[in-house]
Amino acid sequence: MPRVDRRAMGVHHALDLMVSAQIRLSPERDPDRYAWLLKLTDRLEQKLQAQPGNHRPYLAHYVLCLFQTEACELHGKAEDWRCFMTANAAGSTGIDAQKINAYQEYNADFRRALVRSLLQALTERIGLDFSLVETLCGELLDDPELKPAEVPPKYLLDLVMNAYLVSDPFAPLKLLSFGVSEGFLRTEAVQCRDDVPDHFAQPIIRLALWREFLTVAHKVWETEFRRGIREETIDLDSELLIDGEPVPLRHASRKLTVDMALMETSAGQRLIRSLFNGPESSAMAVAPMSSMEPSRQSLAKLLEYVASDRTRQLFVDDQGREYRFGKMLSMTCALQFHLFLFGQQDRLNLPIFSGGDDQKASMATELSNRLRQKFGISVSAKTLYQTHKGDREGLYPTLWRQWQIFALVHSLNVANWYEHQCYCSCIQERVAQLSHRRA
Image 1 (cartoon, rainbow, N blue to C red):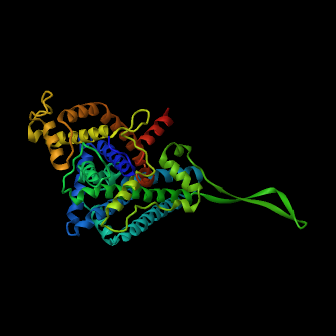
Image 2 (cartoon, one colour; image 1 turned 45 degrees about the vertical axis):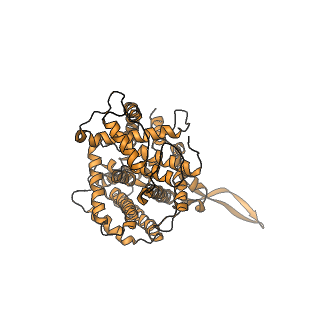
Image 3 (cartoon, rainbow, N blue to C red; image 1 turned 90 degrees about the vertical axis):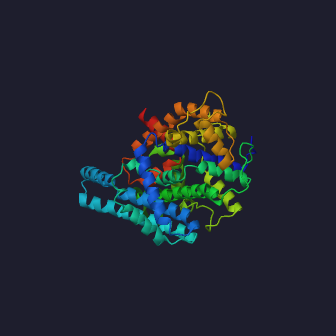
């Protein structure tokens, strides 16, 4: 078993995050969503070809952030939801529907401006031109083949993470290889090459930027809550005598209605803490980076940032005990085997596994050899096959059902992207919460 220090735990948490997201993204179960995301990432990659190579991962991330928020706010279903809420509010309060619509439009414009302001500050911090991000995003929003305002709203949920994993399905394997090469992780199961490519570090950077995007979403969500708090002055019947003069006792109270279900997930708890702990607690916990050329030390800090304030959801047993590295590795590689079968089985025309013989030609031996040659990862064909078989029958359907419940609930009001995004970091907690409330 590898020595587990803070950097190794960062790798473990990053794997948990990516592998669970990849399972929910399975092209086998939702080929249309996968195809649309693939088209989106291809379009973006084409547009980035003219940019410097070291700028592209960062530009891709921030364009996707802005694209996700804009597509949600401008989606046709968002307008349907606003009309529904206007009709209900007008009927229950008697307020003119035009005034309610104007208020909703103001809120949407404010959110969009806030997001742009936050993303601009983040891009300028590392020397990127935010106007380029806006231009590229606008081109994608206007693309007649993408039609983001018309796609099923579930396509937009956690789009930043999903698009990245579609564009780089080997990201978990790159992370493992790079982590061992840099000494973040020690294990005999991964014998890294002497010339591990620099781009194998990109999963760390992209995950840190994704976690930073959660803080953007949290900031918008918190702002929405704070703007809903109303200060009221209440006149009480009693009086105080000050220097012989009667003074009415007045009390200013801040009214806040909170859904107690927020307390059942870590995302909701973070929001409540920021609301009650004062303005200083609302500062965004941005990724610890100041340039697009991260050093080994800064990459280690980014890994810690990825793992901070987050518990594992996939690599734990029923009692919440964390899996050892060997099991995490076999599950990670088994998912790659699942994706490998989906994309390559017809082309290679090989059996999945040949009767327990690790050396006989099969899809399992083919992937086992590729993992060793390209990433230095040693997983036997038999382990790939057996873990894949067990996960395909138990783990994958379970996570897929969780995703379907999550997507069904959070697709209703697609413009509420900021709350949905905060919950995307704890989907299993959110599903448990929703199931409890229905019971």
